[in-house]
Each structure stands twice: as C-alpha cells, then as structure tokens.
Image 1: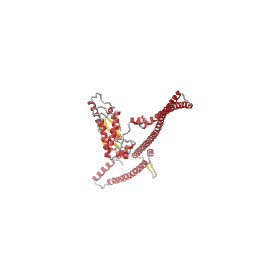
Image 2: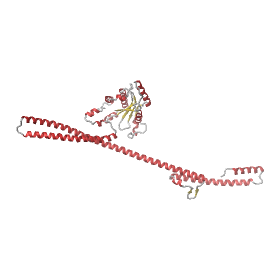
Image 3: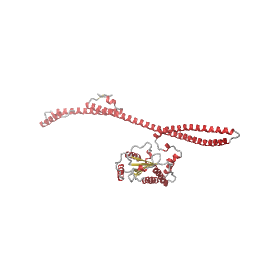
Length: 422
C-alpha cells in the first residue's frame, strides 16, 4: 500500500487515471474494462477544497491556503504475486467488502474522511485506488500524520484487515527489516523505469569499486596471514622452544585463526556485492528491454501519426483540386464555352479538371455530358417554340379575323417581343 498527497491539479490528474476518463494508459487491457468497479463515487474537488479551507479556519490558521497545498491524499491498495492470487480467488462482493473496510479504517486511523474508492481489473494485477480528504478533522494536513511509524502502523492495519478475508495473506517485509537482512537501500525504493535506467549503472559502478577495494583488503589480509604462518612454521621447526617462544607461538596461532575469520567475513561481503552486481545487471537488462519496447512503441506511433498526417494532407490536396475543377466547370457552363465532339469534350480551360483526382474527373465528365444533353434539348425546344410563334403571328395577320382578335394578337406579339430572350 502506498499513499501520496495531491494538490488540486494533481488530484484532477489522479482522478482521470482512477476513473478512466480521457485517454486510457497503454498498459490497460480494453477488453477487461468491464472488470473495473467504482465503490465510492468521489465528491467534486472544489467542494472538498472548500471543506479543507473551513477546517483550517476552525483550527485558527491565519494564512490563506497555498495553491500547492494538498487537497486530497490518494492511496493504492496492491498485492504481491502470491497475495494477488489469493485475493483474486475471493468473490467480487468479498473483495469489495475488504476494500471498503480497509479504506474506511485508513481514513479513521488518519482522522479524515474517505472520498473515493475504485477497483481496477483491467491492468496486469488487480488493485484499488482510494482518495482521502487532505486534512484531518482537526484541520491539520494529513501529511503531518504520515510519519514512518504511522506508515508502518497502516501496513499492519492493512494486513490485519485483509487477513480477515484471506487468512493466508502475509504482511510485506518492512523496509528496515529488509535493510537489516542485507538488502541494498536503493532496492527498497519504488523507482520508475527511467529512474532505474539512470541509477543502475551508477550503482553497479559503485559496487564494482567496492569489490575492487575489497580485493585490496583481502590481499593485505592474506599477506598478513601468510606472514604469521611463516613465523609459526619457523617456530615449529625447532625441537625445543623457549618459554617466550612457546608463548609467541600460541599468540601467532590465535591471531591466525582470528585473521582467517576476518578474511572470510570480508570475502563473504565481497561475494555479496558480486551477487548484488549480477542482480543489478539483470535488472538493467530488463530496464533496457522495457526502454527498447517503449522506444519501439513510440516509433510505431510516430510512424502511424506521420502516415495519418500524410493521408490527411493528401485528402486535403485532392479536395482542393476537386473544388477547383468544379468551379472551373461551373464557370464554363455559365459562359457557354464547353464544346462537344463525338470523341471528346472541349473546354476553354481544361487544366483544373485534369489536375483533379480521377474519380472527380469521371463524375464531372458525366455531369458535363448531362448538361450538354440538356442544353441541346433546350435549344431544340426553343427553335420549335420560335417556329410556332412565327406561325401564330402569320395567322393573326389574316384579314378575315375580327378586329378584336387582331387587337389581341397584336398585344400577344408585343408581350412576346418584350419578354425574356431564349
């Protein structure tokens, strides 16, 4: 279990991650999003901030709250490899009950309120994110409550509650216990891949220097032991020893035993550092693989983005060319400059049409042919109409027509001449 304080902006970002709003992380399995469960829907952050300000005022805080002050405290409930299997065997209701009891117990232990809780089942290992109000009921920052002792107590509390639902779950080893057992301090920290990539080579170099120094110390101790062994051998050659020689021989033998024990301790320390280097190198290989995978993924995304941009630019260029072709055809239709032979269409300015994409050229060609057919048909109808009008005019000039009919005919003729031209 890990806990961190969050400012207002950080809290918004954390919520987007916790409640899967916006773009999903790459490591999320979209096919398992239905396994996520919201156990407690959080209050709006401005409302929580207002409560934080009020609680600070009650305790007598004079200064206004800082922009980078913690508004909430976020936490994550995670499990080790074996514990995750045990917890995963519980029913959904049992898991939710365990999460709720633990989250509320944490809030009570820190004297604050539980603001949100969500279970994630769409990542590699099931876990839960919780959110607490960033100040206690007394108006003090929760961060002041998170001492090393308090964090240890929270881990104890988490283990105790989880064991009620899953008795075989064990509390993780304390950091200090791991250090006392021989773990290296950097190995007890939670570090990102980038941090590991930066830190591990330096740590390996440091350990290699330690081994080099221990080599020199071992050589010095071995030389000292060899010197004492030579002295013992010289004394043991004598058949009879003086009292002071007997005493000196005994001291040499005791000193050799002590020096051999000290040498073994140094050699064991050196062996431990060699093991640590090997572990660091193995971790570095994994980090390099992770970096390579991320680089490959980034390169793939960059390539895909480049392809999409190129496609968009190509589509825009084709659209612009198509619009230019349409405008050119409309203008030629308006100016009546399009001609047609049995084999081809003749335009006054064919360049825009030739620059357009083939599908648009094909569509425009069909439209132009249809336009020319309609124009030809209209001209034929106009010629026929003119012929009919001329015949009517001749008929109206007949002398046997009544005067009224002749007057009406003259009026029709004037209206026709004054009307729109065809």
